[in-house]
Length: 258
Image (cartoon, rainbow, N blue to C red; front, side, top):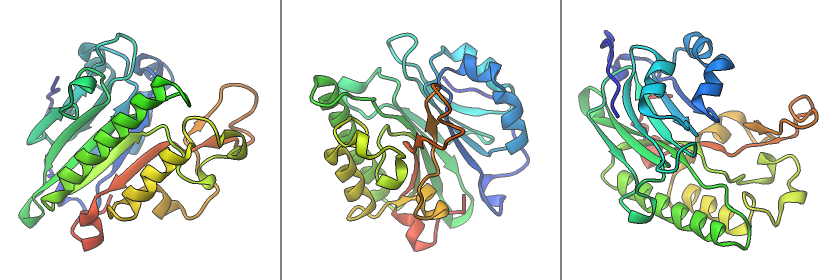
């Protein structure tokens, strides 16, 4: 699905900075009831990445309103997953999925190539929603296969020198600073050694940048998820599984600031 609307008077590269918002809406219908539209109007993002949309195209179009262009991938299983990338400018191209049959209709990966003027070329923005997983079960094996395929795709995108921004809910807390109760989660999916090693490779040898951590410092926090139970939010008992990672072009000083 590609949503069209009025074309704005600016290109992304005309901006001194690009505002990118990434939101796990946990069902876009519920997000609208809880104030998604006023939140978007107040923050005025140029690019919007959504995860756990859990709705068909027509509901997404109505929820966002006019002026957005982009792509939404609905999961084959109704009421599950669903990811989207929307921009205030029409994308040059959009792609759904990782090119692997196992995940073709999972609603977990979409890409949009956004135009930048001059020598900057394109900015490829990805919205991703990784499986929750469950330690020592086939669900965890599936999560690892998806993460490996995602990393392969990220490296392939960055290989031609383009600017890449991958946003979404990766359902992994990389460091102790990303999880308040890290000791109690050492053997649980989302904080397993193999999952954290995936991030070590990506942010190490692969040359990618954890944008949130680079801006927020060593932590603890900031967190992106809190339980509805108790007073988790009030007590800052949360975890950080939402990630925005920038490809190696960021370190060459070529990527527009976000």
